[in-house]
Amino acid sequence: MSAIEHLFSKNQTWADKIREQAPDFFEQLSKQQSPEYLWIGCSDSRVPANQLLGLAPGEVFVHRNIANQVVHTDLNCLSVMQYAIEVLKVKHVIVCGHYGCGGVMASMDDEPRGLIDNWLRHLKDVYRFHKDKVDAVTDQNEKFNLMCELNVVEQVANVANSSIVKKAWANGQELTVHGFVYNLKDGILKDMEVSVDGK
Image (cartoon, rainbow, N blue to C red; front, top):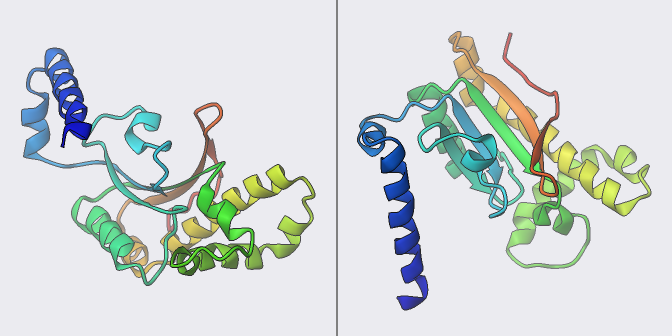
């Protein structure tokens, strides 16, 4: 246990600092959850939704998995989407990938990796859908970045084509799906300009 004791100390320091700035912050936070945003991002520890958006706890509902996938058989992701859209009534779903994504990189070779190969199969499909465009790029780093971007585009399409989002739009719910890519090297988000709002 001693190897993680410092985490409790860091938590206490963080909570004390928040209370200094806003004495009733935690009491108010505990009473309701009403974020406007659902973030579907990569599990990568370098891509924390709240921090890079500059938003406080309670302002973003978050789902993360390897390479920010939205798979129509993933009950975890779909359950998060349904709760966020139908119960929390978020107004924006953000799919955020990032340059330097290990999942995307792993999908671009034929190295066997075990169980994760089943998950990476979805990324290999992204390559298959865009093979000509990706193969036309000769620089490996640019090719890798392009795959990160194309993956976001495909996952935005998967969100928009889900029964959950289609139902929300059919019911007239205000909901827009966005695609972003985060650059680890400068901390800046890039809008992929693939927003869909069902209108």
